[in-house]
Amino acid sequence: GGNLHWFYDLRNSSFWPISFAAGHDPMTAHAFRSLDQSGSRVLVGCRDGHIREFEPTNSTDDGTAFSNYVLYGPVMLGDGAEREGILNRLRVAMALNAGDGQLAIRVGESAEAAYAADDELIATVKAGVNYSFHPKRRGNSAFVKLSGVSGSGAWGIETLVLERMRAGLARKI
Image 1 (cartoon, helix red, strand yellow):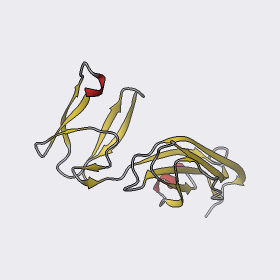
Image 2 (cartoon, helix red, strand yellow):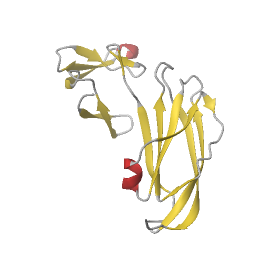
Image 3 (cartoon, rainbow, N blue to C red):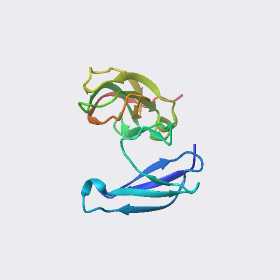
Image 4 (cartoon, helix red, strand yellow):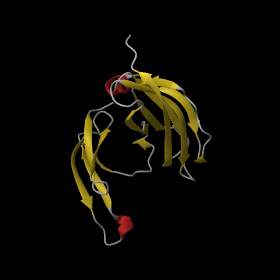
């Protein structure tokens, strides 16, 4: 992998982390606006001397597959730092023409511990509404990770519902 960079999304007024393959690091960018809206592009001048175009539906970068995911969280499972909860149920609805996605969770005794935890794969999710998943994991905080499956095409999410339940005082280990 390459270095971490930050992309500013004007539509959502937010920064997003993005990384590139070695040598493909952006050195400059230009938003080319065409009179024909479909011709507008973001052009990126890269470290290797090539000019590349950002295309949100691509699943490779010059033929090299890349991973893509969204990490939701942290979600407090309990009521504050003193209480734990149980991640009881997850329900995902993917976009109707979406490629497959992998649903994973991270649970920990704090938000920091949950973030650092290994992904626990729950299921592969398909286009449309999926069955509910019942991970039944106890902790203070959780993250939910949704990632694309290589070769299944672009994916999009419609809804993610997380159900939690109080579990009691945090346990000391």
